[in-house]
Image (cartoon, rainbow, N blue to C red; front, side, top):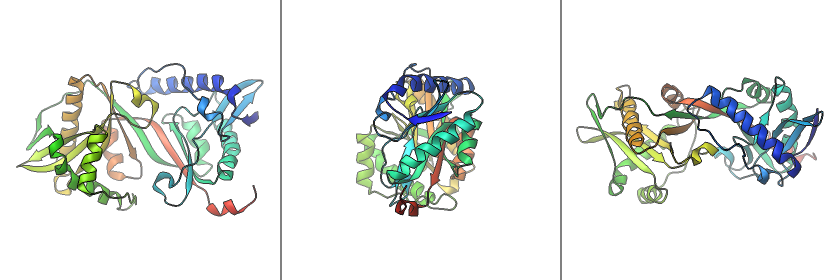
Length: 317
């Protein structure tokens, strides 16, 4: 096996390999949409952060990353590099060995660029790839999952009713947004995301063209769910796709089916509008999310992360 820098000459073979890997995952997750055979990876050929593996003149794998960015993965003070879905792939039964060699080469470039937080988006059913990165100190952090149309969508479940909030009523969801951020700080999640005031929250919803849906009981807001037009993987660019970008339920209403009913209401409404795919990304370190979303959505990515000892930046690599 020969490892080389990812250059413009690698792009065509890498795009074909990335598409093949996506199709392998799509066979396991039928809800994933059919996409163009050509993925544009040319932007990764000039940043000096990618590596490619060849055997007998044929590409067997590649690993690329976006330019280093600050405060990586909500960790203040450190730079990170991320390899998104489609920016890495390997072929054949030797994927584990190929990915191990690719990361050893690429990680040296990432650290030299000042990035000590490393993230990579792998396909959820690629056990060989995940094992390779697990052995290099990576752990699961984020999951992308997808649902598709075809379920029954009741307008009412038990004592709860459901509706979409008008823009002038977005402020009603603000306490629940703050409740969600407070929940994020609890063990074992430990994610301290910055808070905003109510005006900023509502303004961002409008500017992003987000939609808010709510569950009600006796005139009280019990749960809410936010829908955005786009997510974080390339499949979210499809016109028939929407993304769950926020959800929360007050503790006194949990365990009563309110979130399942609200999700059914939202999926039914979107299906009537021609949206046949809805996705969500959630942190695997959030036990509530990991217990809820897999009941309705099928995972198609596994987001792996590793934090390198930043004292290595003092060394001459």
